[in-house]
Length: 440
Image (cartoon, rainbow, N blue to C red; front, top):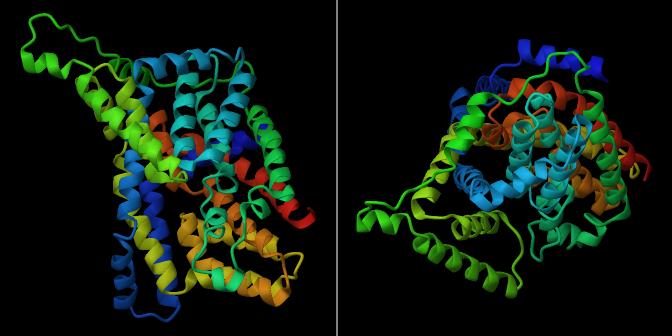
């Protein structure tokens, strides 16, 4: 496993371009596919431009998840807690395994929370154990734990089809989460990944004596820069107000109260609630308004990748959906499927579509009707088929840089640093998930 990881990592470092350059190649490929489908250049360009702003709301949400999570992590209480937690593991094996499992648990609860919490834990592990662990592998271990997000409480597809009046309700009805997220097959696959993925990451650690890359010193300096000590001596009244806890505490209590009312009324976790929760906790725990502004500014600097790249992914999705390419890929595998193998082929096709349409909800909008018709024609279990699509959407995230952007922004690394490791996880996890879908 270590040898495979070394080869994969060297290939990624040598041949894998920056995520923005890779995005350009994906764009050209999708545009060419649209032309090969028989659409005129003007039509394909219109599809591309129409989709460019389709992810605008999601871009803003993702940016706020990153920035508010970053600010929360740098409040004194949370930061000291993270440092204490990072000291729990005593060796590299424990660091890697614990980092992976923490990301799995957090991502199962909410993908937005998981990406931030997992990144922060990996970063603190790198700082506390600097010189003793291979930092790119620790960050890759954290991202590997993201595999389980779509089989959890925040999974887009299983929670959507469990909602009354969803867009396929007349075709497949309402499928409760007891048949998807909490089904025996899903739980067994989850358990298998919780065992296999950390072991895989541990096996890929460098040998004793091999070069170990530590977290960059610049990242540690940036982290400590946020530990601001403000002197109240000789301050003006305005500066004293800025350095007091009154303003952030008022906003934090207001946000927290709105969350209490929301959940008391039966509300459920979604991305906006994650953002509001991060705001509430960060504001309540921060010592002053001026410090929170500085924490927030640090997170904003890290969010440029999301702001710059997400609109281009929206444009790719526009072409994939409007030209029918995504539907063609999804439908191609249904022709060779049986009632027993449809979940497996749904998983494979979803993994392919996810490379170009890295959005669970957007992918289900394209692939859901096709899989529902195939399940009805083959008399297959629709709950298993839906979960297979969810697993496929999560699976190829190990090869798709879209979701690495917020994590890498906090970790202070590039896509080449971790993709060699996550490519190995892609293969290993594919065997676990595919086998589960075929035989359970």
